[in-house]
Image (cartoon, rainbow, N blue to C red):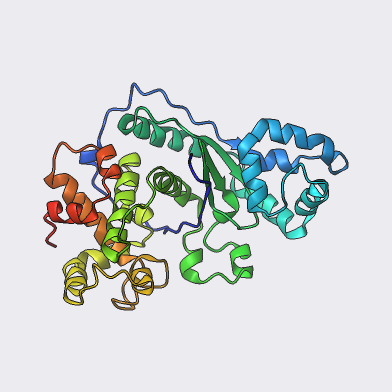
Length: 333
């Protein structure tokens, strides 16, 4: 059974063009229509004097997602005697209501997102015909979780996508590199990234830098296949200048990893320097974007698929021999 996963995912707002030829597939006959359910609207429509009577409706209507949501906001489950008062406390919290009103302003409807996610999951069905399409919900959690994944469930915390300069992120004193990615245009690729990670969890007997680079490179390759028209900047989470820096310094980055014998380092802090979010990749230069080694991993995976024609996306995602992927990629920046 799939584990419940709560994601914190980052990305950027500036766009550049991308090539889509290898992912130009025919999805015209695939019948998939996503219908996002606005959980936060049902929740905030509750009559506070009738919360106890309304809870059975939420349990029936939202099932496992309702349980997961209660876990996210840390108020226990509906069978608790204290639950109605705790839920009322959440719904009457002044800042939470400010956030809810802002969400309704930024997301008066989700029609465009419905259309784009339907298209993305048509691509998903093309590559993975036997896999089910998740039920999709929106919610607000007080900035606790931008994405929630469970068995056949994809939840979108829309309060994490209110705009780069949203006052709430200022109040939370989030650093610029975290705030720059919190805009509604990033929801689509974040959804597919979260779904890829939940479907194909990291699995390697040796947790080293190379395995992490290529694993997340596979995830980005998956997202590209689901969203063939999406700019690389949105998928990677970079500005156009950050992406250009990686392209211009691809050979230098790879040379540094080889020369310093870092690819097979299993040291936790070393790995984090190269794959975690931040103002830059500290092991390179302050001019570099964060997660630059993940971008390199994406290039390795792309080379692997180009040099081994006939491999399906599903075979790629199931392949956990990261050394094999590197070797057969013949990667030479």
